Image 1 (cartoon, rainbow, N blue to C red):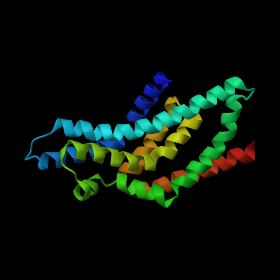
Image 2: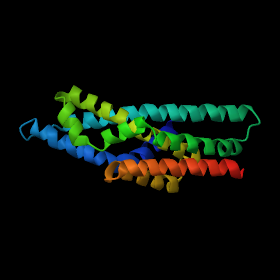
Image 3: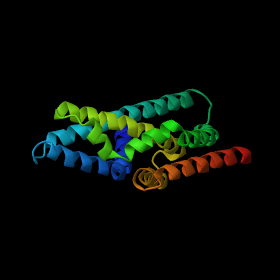
Length: 200
């Protein structure tokens, strides 16, 4: 399970780099301004650490759930592939529906405006950096957890799904019409899930 955790964290970190970069860049800029032009490397590390802690908690929960499912499969005659195949359409519908919710939209708005957040919520010092990183991590989790769950159910270590979901997260966070794109992705996922159910 430990190997799976680090593999998942590595994959997730690679996926989140494009959308995390503007936040790190904005944090670097404002932290230098608040320290008379000098860069506090420890603040940057703590900001990133706060972000990672939140996602690590989510990863542990996801992998623990998968571990428990594996134990159930080992003790019963349930077929893992058949079960995931039957669950995946409903996961797609649920994830698609979440993409259309006000909560998703609120989290996405936060993730798209790092400068606005820092100007309004800036906290000096190491503790402030850690708290801001964790706070942003929670919003980022609110924005992306459902997409990660969809990838988890479709194929945890599939390079194709990894690239696709990295593109989705990046477009949602970085492009001007990210909110519209998020709703489009939601509609496509719901349609896909319904099609799979009707075709089974």
